[in-house]
Image (cartoon, rainbow, N blue to C red; front, side):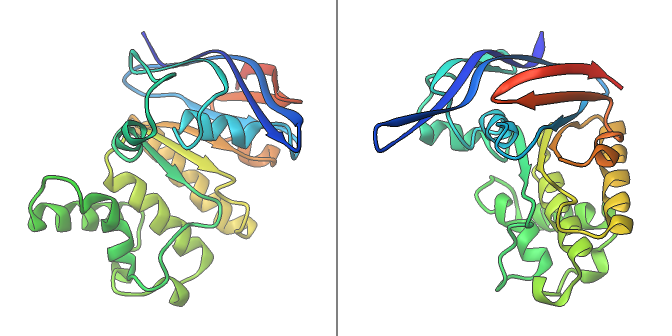
Length: 229
């Protein structure tokens, strides 16, 4: 059984009586398994790659088609139920980190866990374990404005890890970083994949895509190519 299955997914936007098709007839399977897939999605600006990632991440809903996650059809599920999928089964890492400026690094990582049925001690341990894994436990009490871009991205990754979601999505995760820090972040994704996480990331950079095991190229809202690396 596939972990993720998209069947004939279409996404259209309408503005001032003009319809724009962002995705058209997308068919995609992401395999389940002990080790998880590591997929890079590439395409030019406006090709539909981020729209595709948002639909996979339950951040957006397809206009038509079928989306099956872990054997469950999410195609017609209500938004309030989709929110329960986000964070529990799928964690999303944004290009510009999406950290809350007034919170410490620890508090930012803790946020998705606050509504979970767990003790404060358990929550604290999970946050600290996640920060330790990405190498920034010593920055727990710093605020985002006092740490570097690479450290912010590590905090965003730690937040995703703390959720214990099996699928991690990342939209241009190195786009705001220098090349050296970008390589460090990509090595971290490689390690997470080795630990069994399924990684799907969007990038415009071939060097970043080369870290993945599978490359999907999007053009004009359609899958142009799908190859193993």
